[in-house]
Length: 105
Image (tube, rainbow, N blue to C red; front, side, top):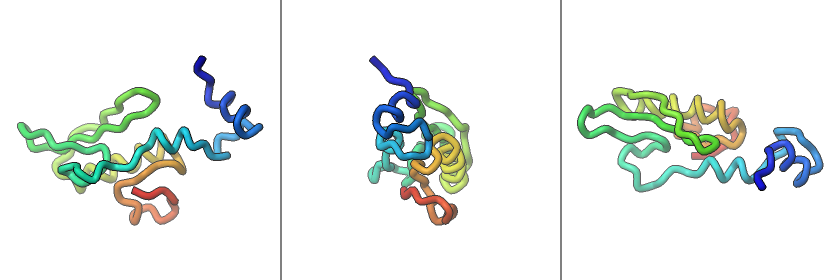
């Protein structure tokens, strides 16, 4: 049986407050692979076109954020979407550009 997030929070923490911290959310947002060619999480390079594509996984879905000319342009797009979807649990490609954010890449 799959529990709804609010139910899970109530069972684990006795509260349905979304900001009380859930390790499940943190584990969904894994660290980037150190062996990637682009060096950034959620990016890959299309060999045919040479463009860098951005994709993020959330709740079993892949969300494509589109193509970018360079990995440097694509990394902030991933960071913005990760902050929107994962909030304080987001692991960013460029954490130094978001000093108010506590997550690490």
